[in-house]
Length: 296
Image (cartoon, rainbow, N blue to C red; front, side):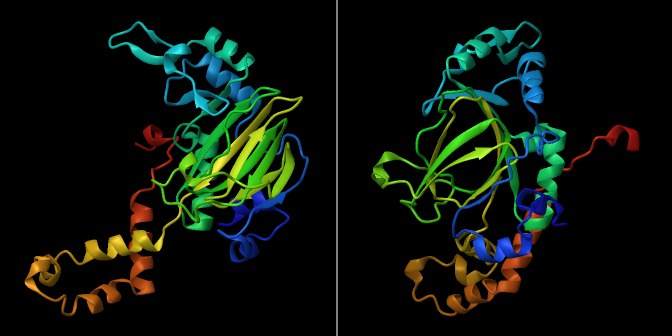
């Protein structure tokens, strides 16, 4: 069950990684091994998806220097009943890419079978939800300015190379709605400055500020997002589990919360928390079936 994680992090033992690095610090696994991740998504795959399949927004989007390009600038509607809206206008996409735009393929864990299976294996190893996007950036370009992610990240460098600069977090362990903004303040000097080459892996805990740019080569990397189940999530689930308790349904003006703290503490017992987390995790996994019709 740890095969996928070990493949990302080899030669680092997956169990040791989880114990020593989870949510604590960044980690780079250098390999310089072109082709290592091509079976997940190659440059040829990206070109085929973008140029030959009438891919539609939001399955893909374009960004440049921290800004998302207007969808109408690189898509068009294909005449049908009803029309296929937001379809890639290939000549415009190519022109924007040549001008420095990054092609982002989104939710590949949903619509690209090799990555769907890969993410499911990681979910099995980690017990957490996993998602995948890819970023194809032309040489001498930057897709995003300094920002943080609200989930943990594994970056798999598929092709080319990309320079990464990391900065200390301005907001510790941000939640999903706590996206980066300039109101958090300015970042300090980089804590790390390195180049990822084909086959390399980067682990980036949520909240760590980062930016990346290409130099003399085009770059394709996969970003594997790993969702967190926080104690805030656990507390909300615990309160939901107590909705049938009359004491929690009384108006707060009625008086003291007699006994409510003990009831809530019981629902926050580690075994109860894990049981609810596990149930939700299993119930929200999307089936991966290549042969559903054949089985029928």
